[in-house]
Image 1 (cartoon, each protein chain N blue to C red):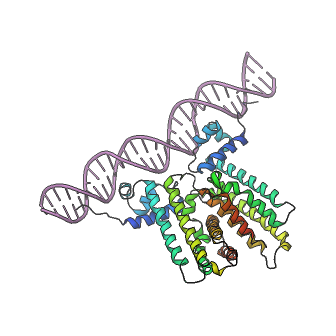
Image 2 (image 1 turned 45 degrees about the vertical axis):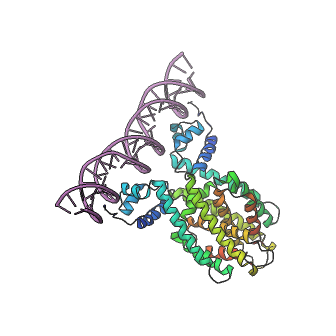
Image 3 (image 1 turned 120 degrees about the horizontal axis):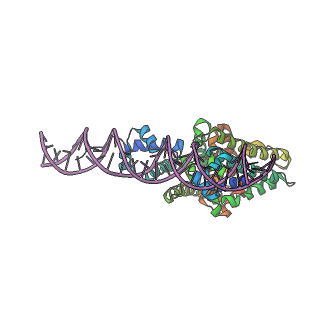
Length: 191
Length: 191
DNA sequence: GCTATTCTGTACTTATTAGTACATAACGAA
DNA sequence: TTCGTTATGTACTAATAAGTACAGAATAGC
């Protein structure tokens, strides 16, 4: 009953993610997104709202993707330590080499002082909380695998810190061997 | 033999640091720096060059301050583990609570995709390299304090990762107790 | 084919901001 | 005091970018 959309919104969000991820929220202009996606500004505004709303959708999508993968990886029927090792190891391609350069969209956004928009912060906080909950739940459930006095809550948070640190330092494109060595050493805390 | 400067450049760099640290490089306009410092733009340009050059000076100053403090702390005549504990503990006020909100200027800059200026990257990389060298040198020197097979190089890097992670997550204003617990747990690797 | 409705593209407005031109003020030296 | 020199402040330019007005295109139903 009206003219149909000439683009796939999901596809545009994917393209927008790449641009935002590479250049950051502030430095990305909507003109760059129209150039990359072929969708003109009025259509972007109609479909996603303003720049903030578009970025928020991109960020939520990014978070959901990682959370989904974390859920699957951490639910595997292997020892908790092995599941967490696989989870952390899965980040190596994003923490090292050329691809590491861009780091993590969530952390890049969290460290961007200009994004004090409450909604961005909320999205990031919820993401971090959920991720840590996944780790904590797994460590608590398999507590019997560890030594006496093992503290699953502190350990879950430590792993979050290491995870954030690896992705923060990823911009230096470290060698994947160094990243792996750090992961192996930190997993020594799971005993 | 000419009109003297009406401001202290060092003082202006200090003020500029606060503004850049709070809002980030991109989001900080020179007008905000003139407003905060009382120094008009032409004077800023004459004294420091353009916005990039000013920020680079601010960043280098920031790095030098932290490196100087790290050198002093890590050179103390106490066991390496204790020196490193003191060094990490010293970051707690910057990793937690209200003050943690702004995070670390260096990491904030490293994760800002718009700063692909080669000189910014170089300053940050040199800073990280020197910091890691300080840790590595201390751990190597006191290697005898640790167990057989202890790897000072990997451990130094792991500490850098934890350090970066704490400062990346600082934006969430975690409780200082949580930060301390992570530090204590990680120091368990120094044995 | 015709119409109501929604989407698209061009071209605009408006605001912000990096950087500068220029007139003037403040100093040291003679 | 006067001159040469360097700093300061006002006011500008130019460029970039967010957001929008509007005319026209594409569809489904009639």
